[in-house]
Image (cartoon, rainbow, N blue to C red; front, side, top):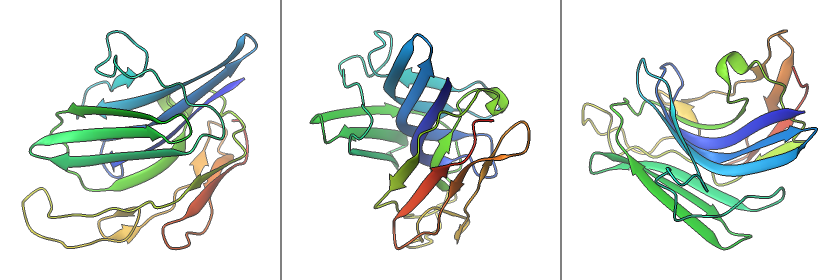
Length: 192
């Protein structure tokens, strides 16, 4: 039994705002479920999560159900005052796109594996290893409009930061490996 979300996005490192897109997996004794999602977390408010297949979701026209082993490409970018979310399942030849507003500072770019529940209190599903390839961040300017030029992959304020996921019992649950160019792997270590 467990849950895991694998996503890429903006913000979240050093602030409580986030814009991310990815896939989540949930396993219970009754079976397994996976979904594509995007999430917008405004400052001081609960996150708004939108799942593929939910008829009330802006992604209602997209029906892909990601499966283990699928080749996924995901992106979040900011253009013309909106955050744009793209989810591509190359294995199933499916493309989902959405757009949202959020007053976030766009101060970091992230590739994450986590437990998408408050305080990470649920067990982390044993996902084995997740391979991130082609991960990059590019800035045409910061929130004040100053040009900062190209930045390195997965960085916060110009620096790459690898963060291990710990659990309620302080054990390392998921750990990123060394980055090679724009590639790295996150390995499962423990459930809680």
